[in-house]
Length: 397
Image (cartoon, rainbow, N blue to C red; front, top):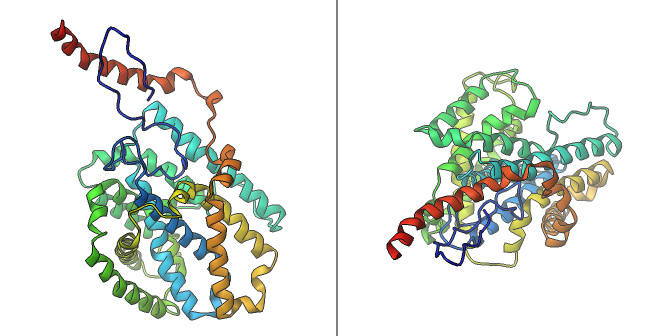
């Protein structure tokens, strides 16, 4: 909303801070605390959420780099299973938390289109062409079948549009879990929009919508931080045990139980089990996220850019055969791949890289929208403030 200057003859109550402008990372809502569920005023960013987003995106990039080399190491496969249990749920929960104020107001719909829909179209097309000409793939090109990591933008668009519905119903989280359970026992949903994954991850987004700032403070107590250490140790032990016993496809939340060759009842069990594990491990991650500004806090605003670009690096190295080198499948090689993946995604989250790719990740596209549609909310807010100020003006007279 724009701050319209009041006439000199009137004294008006100041307008609230703007909450509908372009954020530094539109695909993942900015970690603002004003007007979006935080605790500070003035539209300041909460370092905790920027730190959490950065750490989550590092785990995403590291997990993608592990995928091609994990087959030769049970330890790496165990780590992979643990990370894939909660790294995207953590990211999605934060996205849901900062989507709590989303409605169908024109300016917010505009931000949804420019910050999510347009980057999805651009990067989906770019990835498909990259796969075709660099990866020499003969797979058909389709903007409606997300490939690799573009599914998240597609999912975020759908989840955001349904936000008013989840704010309307009385028990949103149980309903979302019910939808995920039904998706897990319904074969043949199809790959369009990667709908199975959208439905299976839906509870994480709805949980974020239901959370309040104080819930994040609860997991940041010292005793939670201490308790998280044995929890992570137990998770690694379970991850080690599941390596030869569980299909990793369950962790991707794709496909029904029948399509994975399991009995139908395994679908609901796995949905609930994975959601519980993801929630527990996400809480443990948040317990260790610094609440103060650190050297990587500013990188949290660039996680969308890092997320969308690191896939080209991972797939490019894979297509070039760089991950087929024998020494990379040793312990030292696995550590090197991990460090390089974290370094690359960190670089891609920096401000210079974001500035270069802003045309694709944060397009303004003022030419595509009617001016009155995006400025109407500001006028409505101004009118509301004027009506509030009128009785005070009359009394002053």
